[in-house]
Image 1 (cartoon, helix red, strand yellow):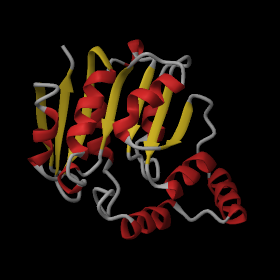
Image 2 (cartoon, rainbow, N blue to C red; image 1 turned 180 degrees about the horizontal axis):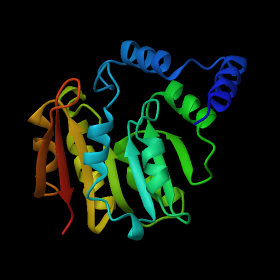
Image 3 (cartoon, rainbow, N blue to C red; image 1 turned 45 degrees about the horizontal axis):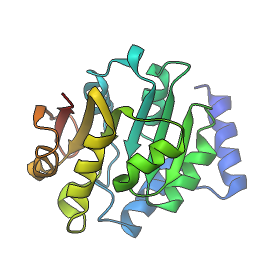
Image 4 (cartoon, rainbow, N blue to C red; image 1 turned 90 degrees about the vertical axis):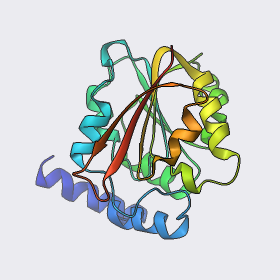
Length: 204
C-alpha cells in the first residue's frame, strides 16, 4: 500500500467518523471484553501459520467468526479465488460498520449476528456449506452454552474435508470443538502476544 493510498484511507475514515484500526480495536475490547479475545491484534506469524493448511484452490466460501478490525481479512482475500466468497460474522455492530467501510472487495461480506447462527447466515447468502471457518472468539469466556452451540453449528455447516481453524490463548476451547469435530491438529505460535494455541479441526 502506498503512502498516498494510506493517507486517502485515513481521510476517508475521518470524514466518515470511523476510528483507526487500533482505535477501533481498543474500543471493541473495552466495550465488549468477553467477546474480544485479546487487547493486541494477531501477529503476522500467527496468521500465516493459521491459514497454511487451507486448500485455497478448492475454497468457495470462507467464513470468519469475530473478525474485529479485520486483521486476517487482507491475508484471506489475497489468497481467496476470484469466484469465492468470504463472510465475516460479528456481534459487535461497531466492527461490522468499520469493516463495511474499510473493505470494498466484492467477495467480502460483513454480517452482524451470532456464530451460532452460521448455518442460517450461510444459507441466506446462497450457500449450502462453508469450506473453512476461522475463529478467534474467546470460547472460555463466552456465556454458558454458547461455545457448545458454536461448535455444533460449525460442524454442521462445514463440508466434508473442510476445517474449523481456531486460535486461542487458552486450551479450554478444545472442550467446545472436540465433541463435534474430533480430528484435531494442534500447534503453538510463540511469536504472538500472548502466545497462542492453534487448532485445525477437520470434518471427516
